[in-house]
Amino acid sequence: MTRFPAHVLKSVLDKPWQAVELENPIPLDALPTPALVLYRPAFERNLKTMAQHLKKHGKGQRPHAKTHKCPLIAQQQMAAGAVGVCAAKLGEVAALVSAGVQDVLITSPLTSAPKIDVLNTLLEHSQDLKLVVDSSTGMDALEQGIATDRRLGVVLDFDVELGRTGTRDDALAQKLHDRVSSDPRFYFAGIQHYAGHLMHLQTFEERKTRSLESWQAVLERVAKFSPKIITGGGTGTFDIDVLQDQITDLQVGSYIFMDREYLDIDAQNDAQGHPFESSLSVACTFVSAPKQGMATVDGGYKAFASDSVTPMPITLDGCQFYFGGDEHGFVKLPAGYQEPVLGQVHQFMVPHCDPTVNLHDYYWVQEADGLIHNLWPITARGASW
Ligand SMILES: Cc1ncc(COP(=O)(O)O)c(C=O)c1O
Image 1: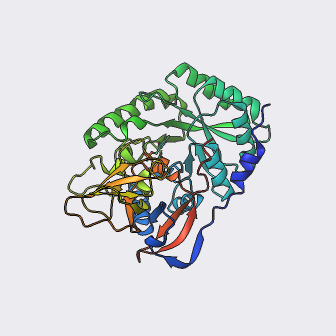
Image 2: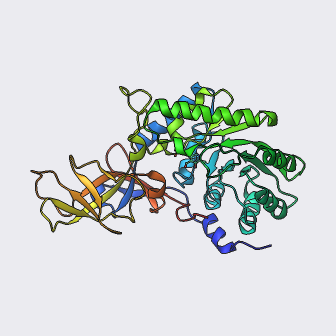
Image 3: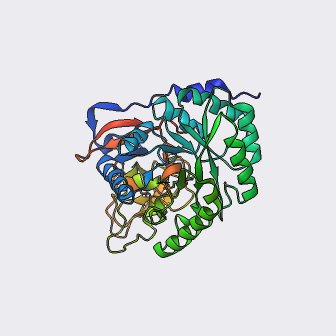
């Protein structure tokens, strides 16, 4: 069998995940910018709000660790009552299990022998891993690569419209179910449906209609399997999918940070706004100002994800951020703004949280006193396999 390079897996399993407490808390302007700043009071409110919401509706939470890639955050989500967590990548699973987070659902299918080799090793670290399967090739790879003394939960993944992962072929689903059920190494854990293309639809009503329709289509197809777990959904449908009785748990990810992309969509109740707050920003320093009305900061494509909207200045009223290259951003200052003070540090709300997090080594954890007290390692950053 083709093996996965063992040192790559080991390097993540051995990577530190524990918090580092600063002996002397530091202010934002002492940060090595660009630095990813997590404002803990808002983050904790988000954790609590989601936990209470799902509990009220009788749903489990299976938060997605792809968002934060940080075992310390996964531990806090488990402590807040999560039934387990999700991971998109094996590198994330390695970071999680090495920190003792055992119940992990891998939400993307695996189809190659080296990846199954990693999964086989990770099953030594946790008896509680689950993997989605949506193809015969994926099932073949599992049958060939998982040792006889291991046990893996298999979740069948169903697609309706997104066209990313999940099967649309019900005859195939039946065959996969039969293969899983007849092999003692595997057990049928349930089904997954993720309609990611609906998460950022602007209006609540459109998200509601389309998401409930999508789920209804899947639930009719999977009823014959009597799945124990029916999992899916995300932050964009957190207050919609709870209306569907049969769903057991939601895979919410971004709610802990609430990036600009999510704050831009309409909340269920416009007057109340979103129940989750922005807790994640990147602190950058003014490093130059060659042009009138503009200032240059030390954060660009290597500090912020650039796949969607732009970073939003938080501590600079009326300013606009533009990407200025790999290491730089431009801040357009409003008319009448005083001269930019070089050396000053400003915060920018992250545009899209997941890929922004993957660019940084640590969360610099800021407390209500405005100071940074702790560093939380982003253990699975870069482990995108
Ligand atoms: C399969 C799956 N589930 C859940 C999520 C979490 O979504 P969100 O960050 O929108 O809450 C994602 C995000 O891409 C995902 O791919």
